[in-house]
Image 1 (cartoon, one colour):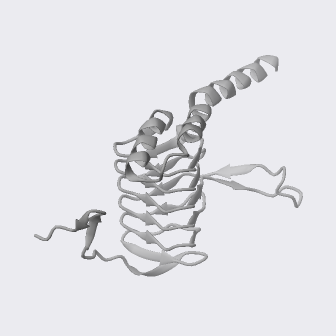
Image 2: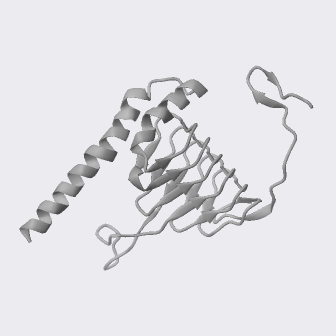
Image 3: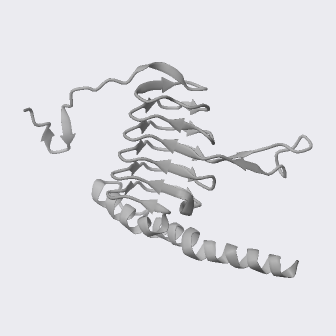
Length: 198
């Protein structure tokens, strides 16, 4: 029994030193930086070694919380905006070109009740996948076990409680399909001027 407790303590210590503490330090040292593209890319580069699997071009806004980052897989050119909160213990995948707006909450855990109380009931865990090119707007919440299909838009303040197919716009609590997500014509690609026509 003592050996099991020692092994568990050593695993927890390893986890804290390898994953949790370093990503917390990245936030602590960089959250005073402005929330512009350069700072977001630098913050993403510093956080990258402390994320399970991370592609190129990660942009992290200020005050992003990543719990259990060793279970997080991030594709290329992902943007996670200011104040987002991700609990990845059950396994989370953000495919390439995903955008998470400000204050998005995604949890791979869900509390359960025991004897009429949630306090000591424990949790269940289920993986979450956000498909390539999808956009979760500000204040979206995503429940454990949910997949959002490729190229979908989840409207601000929505609660995603079940799987969302690709190529749709969803909104509401719980989120329901509003219609198809169609390509549009860009007017700007950056702050310096209009999109190139051609």
